[in-house]
Image (cartoon, rainbow, N blue to C red; front, top):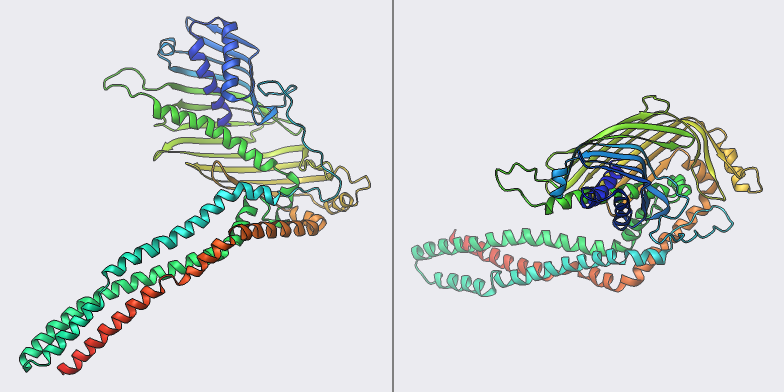
Length: 549
């Protein structure tokens, strides 16, 4: 929610500062639509603009902002956005308002015309051909093209690890106790043998102390080289495991590592991932812009009475609704302390429900911490009556939640680029239908029979990774049922995909990886050299001890 609102507000700030103080309303409307569309990369439309100068009041009616990634839908639309702003601050290119009203807000609404800048229609999605299960797995060649840089970086990291070890011990070998030093100790001992008893004892004591000092050096070096030998072995094992490890990582990234444990995810297609990515994209656009403004904003001289900000909105009052199936989920709330100086956290709290029931609660906190943006957002939704919810977009196997009573809890946290989150859903009194079960599709008929006794839907979505590369996993209590009907063919496809990825990695990097594995004993010669010289020193010490007794 916060992401949608801030994106719209920041867009307005850029345009209003340039036009509101002196422009006529038609010019302001044109400027908002023209410059706003350029900023978003998709159409921004306003039905009407109302501007009053003294005091300065701005109101936009019928604001729609198209989604640049999905031209037939809007990022957001709002019936009215209005604010009383500080006109003096506007002249100084600052947007300062005690309160902004954001009314009739909706997100992810459908458009009747494309939201592309040139108005062109997006390319049609290819039609799925017959055959079940209607599950499209990623193409191995396409994946390899996208993942090649990551795999290459892994190979180079292993190579650099070996190179660092080798260079380290090449330098260390120059400072090791040399054979000449051992020969010197032996010569001193032979010379002491010719001395009288008192001189021999005194000289032998000094020689023993010198040898002990050398052995202390060996002790530290032995400990160090043992650790580095283990590191070399680990690097070699890492090289040996790389094809399998990277193919598993890729399977996880593309959400095809769960087998029949994630069957519902396959039927949902990319919808779960797209939902997360939309929110993260808007988070980056809004919070990223605020952080950028903070870093670039000039600091005010000491003693200045002016606020050192470009944007300051003390309070945004929000009301809006979302259609969830056939239910109208209304909400209202506020966001406090929106500013490009993020010394104080931005707080968000929304509540709402269907027909004024207290069902929805959203809390969020956004702040700058240790030069990184952090965010924590939680949402609870209780006893929401659902009907007509599509669980699968597949035309061959349309799975629909006909009815149910839902409880949903979501928590997301961001620290810089690190992302973690979960969404847990429980739908009681559930009735799940397969829309094509009445036809000649035997798979749909088997699935419909298997789902007849299901009265509860349990879903658990986990999100990890980074802001730019989220990893989404989804499990449900339907997975085993779906797996029984669709699983055998899918399991075979998944095994083929993983084997293909592993084979491609081995073919491309096999020669390099084999050479890296052969470096397992890279430090063996240095370890042997240390051992030989230490043994010779120990033998000389033992001889001294025997002769002195």
